[in-house]
Length: 137
Image 1: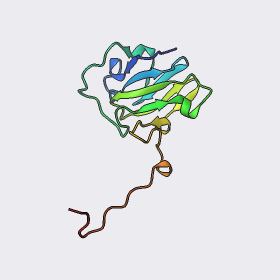
Image 2: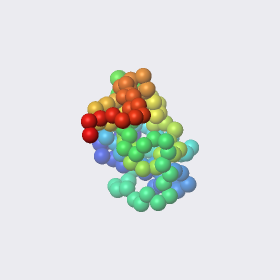
Image 3: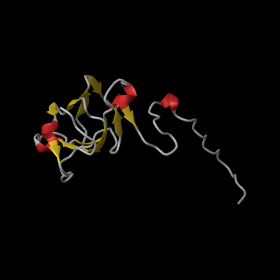
């Protein structure tokens, strides 16, 4: 089963009792097999032409707009990249090319900090100013 760039997969199409995960394929996808969310298997049968209402969708810890990138962990893969559009509280894994993608493969796009996801790679924090008067005003 293959998906292509621009495809939308919606859990609510066949599984009304799920968290309502919606993902958009951003690239790759020739080796796509399934997404497991809330115990449901989402496949090509869950492709939708457009996103419906967000009523009843449950957002998880994963921020909306986050890209999960297969190439980051598996350079020999088809390079599946998906963006979480809505829902996602029950997202367990995405299986593509025999690889399992979880939230470890998250790549947040933050201004000036592209691709940094663990604390050891974060830039040093600027210390808070001490109490008392400071400045030139």
